[in-house]
Amino acid sequence: MHLFLIFVFSVKFKVLGKSLLVNSKKINVMKLSEFIVLNEAEKKRVVMNNAAALATRTSPGLIIFLFQINDYYVEAYCNTDDKSIAEYRVLPNTNAIRHYLDLIPIDDLLN
Image (cartoon, rainbow, N blue to C red; front, side, top):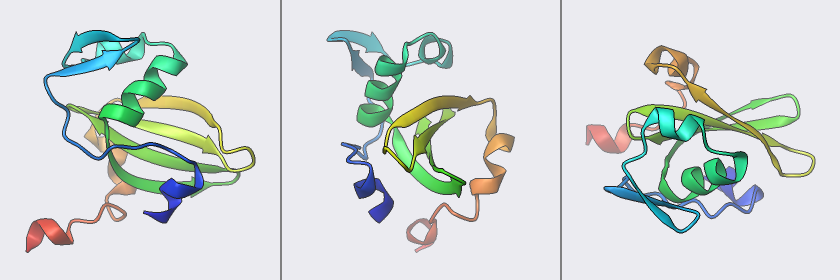
């Protein structure tokens, strides 16, 4: 959890409701096709305000955060030098998150 503080994110851990706000417009539950066509600023707003943070992993020069929005997953690639988000990548299916599975804490779900 301390990795989230490094990037001065305002991540809200909540379940996605029935609507999202993007550019002060109300959008009914965000579909993957709608997310893909957003510009980077809108993607950041949606991820930071409506996605559930699941896990992180590292790569040289990057910390990669895994988020879930509805029934799809998004990775945020954050540059460790300047703390900026380099890009967002939508993962096509649950097979694409296999390398995260050991990183996602599920202890609370089992108790």
